Image (cartoon, rainbow, N blue to C red; front, side, top):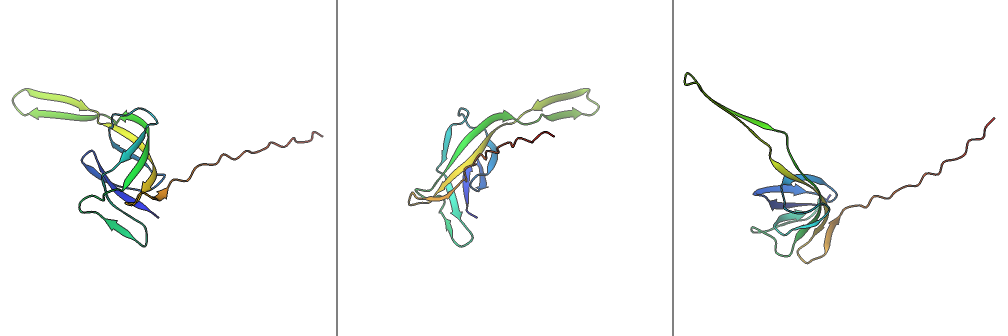
Length: 129
């Protein structure tokens, strides 16, 4: 089970190949390839490579699925006995990405997402009685 720790949008995420992740909004178009070069660590069950603070040459390749907004968070402020109240709403923007490949520091593929194979099921004709 291979993983990597990346940094984007001021946050750090532990990601695996073929994982779908919700992160801070990126200014990209639908189905664009995205490279995260700020890799803090990567490894698997046996080995672990940790940077100080980043690993030079390591990167994570992802695909943008969609950009969207979260549900509304209501912000209500009231000052008692002052007849003062304020109500605001906030919808945080996000990007939904799918992790395709994790590259090691020497440029080789460390982990890769499995491709879905479409199975063709043939319909058998049922004999009528």
